[in-house]
Length: 207
Length: 139
Image (cartoon, rainbow over all chains, first blue to last red):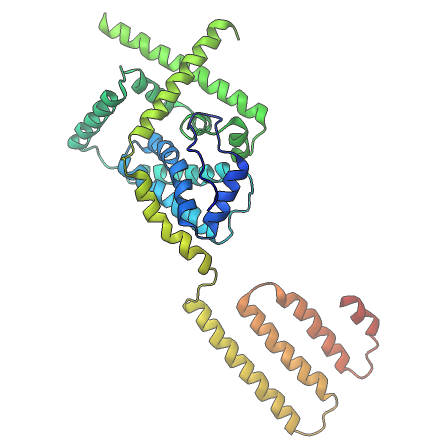
C-alpha cells in the first residue's frame, strides 16, 4: 500500500501529486482495497456534485456516482485505463457521459408533474438553501446555469463541481486551451447577464 | 476587460464555487462508504474476469471441436485411399479449409492471412506451378 494520499481540496486546479496518484492507482488496479478506498474518498463527492448539478436528485446522483466507480474499478482491474497521468480527465469523462445519459433518460421518461413531487422539490430546495445559508442568489445562479448551452455548462461544471484544472478540461473535451478559456469567459459573461436580468425582473415585481 | 468586469467575474466564480459546495453537501454522509461497497467487488473481480466463458464461446468451442474431428477424418480417409497425385497438398488444403472455418468462428482477421496460405497451397498442388517466387513474396 503506497503512502496515503492527502484528500485534495476540491477547489479548481488542486490535484494530488501525479506520482503518488499513479502509485495508488497501480495498487488499486492490483486489487488493493485500501488504495481503492483512497480513490473513492478523493473523488466520489466531486463526481456526485457534477451529476447532482444536472439531475437535482440526490438519490439518482448517488446511483450514477456508484455506477461510475463500478465502471472505473472494472476498467482499472482489466487494464482498461491506459491514459497514464490523466486519471482525473478520464474519470470525469466517464462521469460526464453517464450524467448526460441519465439526463436524457429522465427527459424521455418525463411525466406530467405531480403536485406532491413539486412540493417535495420545493422543500428539498428550501432545506438545501437553509443548510448552505443561501439567500436566493445560488438558486438564481442555478437557474442561469440551466439556461446555458450544453457545451458552456459542461466547462463550468467540470471546473467548479469537478474541481478540474483548465488543462484537464481541455484534455477531457479534446479542445485547445485557448478555445476552452474563451468559452469559459463567454459562459461567465452569459451567467452575469442572466443573473442581472433576473434581478431586474425581481425588482420590477416588488415595485 | 476592465477592473469592474474582472471583479464581476471573480464574484460569479466565487458564487459558482458555493453552488458546487452546495451540490457536494447534498450527498449523504455515507456516500464514500456506499460507493466503496458498491464498487469494491468490481475491482476484485475485474482482474480475474478477463476471459468470460459464456454460452457463445462454449458453442463456438464445440463447433471447433467438431470441425477438428472432421479434419482428422478427412486426413485418415485420404491416407487410406492409396497414392494420390499430390496427397500432401490435398491434405494440407483440407486442413487449411478447416482453419479458415475456425478462423471465421473466432472472427479475429486471421482468416485473410490463412486464405493467402491456402491459395498458395492450391497452386503448389498443380504440377506445373512455377510460382515459388510469388509464394516467397507472400510469406
